[in-house]
Image (cartoon, rainbow, N blue to C red; front, side, top):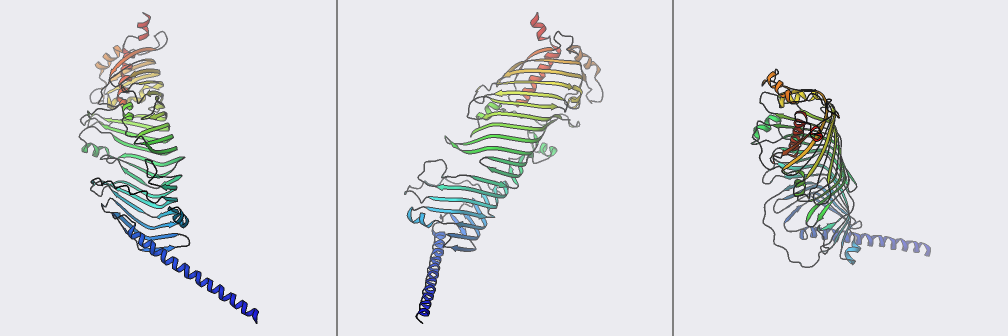
Length: 516
């Protein structure tokens, strides 16, 4: 009988303990929920309005979950709508003993951010009333997020990113730390689906997929395009502006970082690789010239309002085509560079040393063309040096372009052509040598349907048909160019090559003069 009483007593004690624990848990749960609701009312800044459909908590897990969330600031600058916001692993011990908020994870499920930039008066600086409570978040995550940025004063979208999956580790916020950003962070990982960015009145940027972390990144199907077709763009322009169509199959990045230095944004990248870029450029020369000053690349980099350093850029298997419309009733033909491979080293805006560019391509799918080019962004006179060569080129491959652009054609072949020139903001000079055979110019009639025999004869009187008659098998020339500052560097490059060709083929051979 006493044995049964002992068992019964133990059962009652156990049951009582369970009831007591449940009561304590229920009381703690009610108090925790009440505290959370109170904090959501009183601790949220007054300029932010927060609504939610449902609140659930778990005091044992330190978990708070809001469902059907919407929030916006008083200026309607930033709006947030989310399916769920979940805070997990609230650290009670850190809060009680260190006066610090520690969270294991903050998660946003299907958030949509709408950002509208507005003009507003700067807020008065708040008086420093002492350090706020430090905040630590082990992991911040977003799943299936969306971001929209709107043009000021309208519903026109400047930036739209879909399918955002993002994680950021080891976040620490402490007002007492002397740092550019109000927080520090560790590893991050970003994945997005479609991204659209409005680049201004005429172009946009779009990509299909982005993956990025501190070690490497990858972009699939990047596109930079004009918003209008060629004819529509010309109707909207007051002066010349190129029509762009750029598609890059894959962009790869390695060792990517950003931050601040001396008050400027800082961007660092060890390696950038562009795979299979296809770039088509069309220019309507029937429009008035854009006479604004065109910066050479030295100055363009030097004038950037951020600290840029890219150690290496590689381009593989690229294609560039260029067309000019010179007459309304003549459809332009392309100047094409195919199988383009290039390397750009030490690209910087605030660093030191030369930026070097090395390219190889096939001109009109035929002759091998190389160009090496170097310049120092810190050179105030914008000095540069360029060398290049063209080998085994059947000149008739370029006739469709010459026919529509110059009203001329050529015959013969260029076995080898080498050129070197150096220059600055105002002028350049250089030399050229060529080995060619049976080279002849054909000047066309104005309608391009026949040969202007008189002009063709006059031109070829001055041009040497072959270099084989010269002692070393080459003809040599030298040239000078005055830069037109309202034209691009590539126009400058073309003027140097053109003047070199003219002097080499029609002038007195430089080597012959030297021998005399």
